[in-house]
Length: 156
Image (cartoon, rainbow, N blue to C red):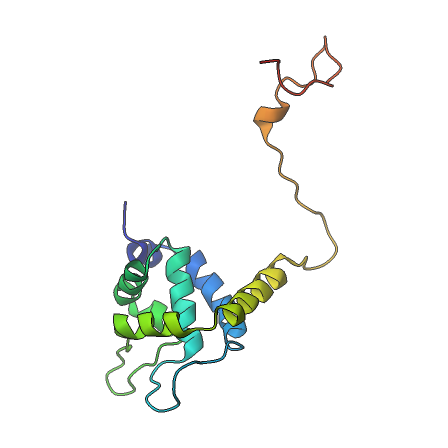
């Protein structure tokens, strides 16, 4: 199984990045716990990168920091990491920087921002058809010529 960065490099519009970029605006509302001096990376860029790594399959702080270190440069630019104007390279944070930030973040504010994002995402775009998914296994054989369809599953 290829690594998440390898999967991102092969897809035209990666879902983890698209969702993380959409989440970016909501993350601007989370207060930054770091001091004003020495901020090299925006809070929303770091949190969006962490969210993209979780959406790509990372399940631990180590996996999150490894994903951010291994992701292609174009993905880092999309997520909002600064680019050096002379060399064009993208600066990626040290794993300890991200760990310290994630530990210090206000969990309630982050939860509200992600909740607002999910609410906005789930809101219907406008009038139209609503999709309903039905599991075929539960309905298979529920209506036959001999039965009226009132029994959904055969007796155990």
